[in-house]
Length: 380
Image (cartoon, rainbow, N blue to C red):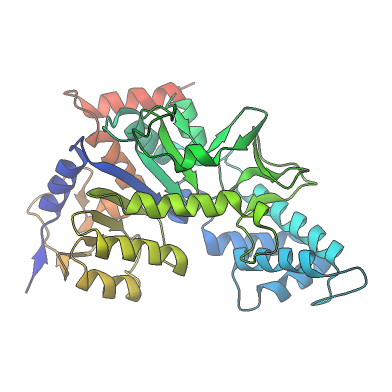
């Protein structure tokens, strides 16, 4: 019966991460926020609905029928855009749809407040980014709306670029997002970590001219955060950042010999799944290493079995080289990697700590990591 060696897997991953010439990306889902104490996608939807008043809850539950939170918001925006005065749909006028959109977005902002979050896992990610000296820019893609990554990068003084230029009301710069490393005439330095928020953020808002700007703080109560675009064509100006960032994801994953680390993502978004699977199947010298907190989704397992460079690791099993098998328990515990018959890297906290240590070459790696994190959150 086949078994996979967790120590060999961890050592090989460390060797891949140490190759400075590779293009390295991380793709982060809601499991990252959950590791820090924030709600995941399902919990967020439940909490947002519960926080609405009776009238708003009833109206929004109609939009949620057969849809998730993002799809319901998209539908509200389509209703607001398409209805003329006097018309209603699902009991909503255009003005009522806009008001409900604003209310739901505000509740999302409230539930994703990071004031009480455990920032240690995301500090470890930022420590990795701070010391990962790759020849090409490190690219961090996330579908999360919260400000965890930005907060950690800034507190550890990691320079990064998120597509916006400015401070008070930063504007999205399409030409800089689309620029490729080494492109002539592009001034964006390669040492900047790239942070791409594919589904928007709690501090993005539509300006008066219908352009998305990034604020220095979460949006105010009377505004709708720019999270997730409508999937219709009625107003292309409102879709620009999302379309450009999605294209950036596709181009980054198709760059030859790319190493992609995927964590906290449930593979519930068909569009993003298509980008990942297509890149893995066409770029056979690239590697996509996916860490699943729970069971492997069936569609992912089916793909991994026929796509050798699509690797999956959970607490108890893995799919490596197309072979699905349990981990072979090592004779002794492996600090930070294996304990209590489980691979510790399946959970984001364990993976982030591993990544941070992989980028540290000093003799006492843990001491250096503690020092970096201590800079951001000194002990009182």
